[in-house]
Image 1 (cartoon, rainbow, N blue to C red):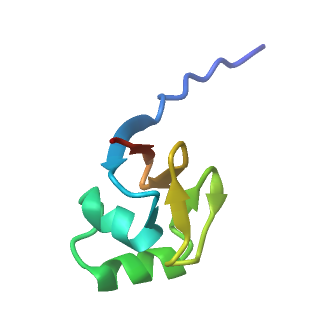
Image 2 (tube, rainbow, N blue to C red; image 1 turned 30 degrees about the vertical axis):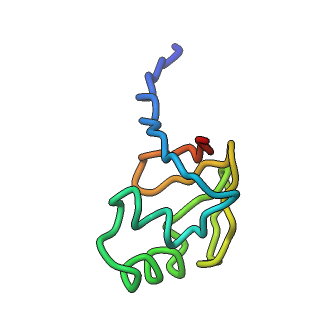
Length: 82
């Protein structure tokens, strides 16, 4: 007997920036995932954020065009707009 499981697709939003890169902690604040820099620090240090599919504990990780980060099953793609 085979069991078929449907996995809900992850939501992906776009985070537009006007600079070459944005730091991970700033990206979390800008996307309203967290409300303060202190909160960003804790969720990153606790290993709750993934960057490009890999757990990242670096607050200053530079995210560039095409990178994405994930927190609580929500994905955000960084897009540079001109």
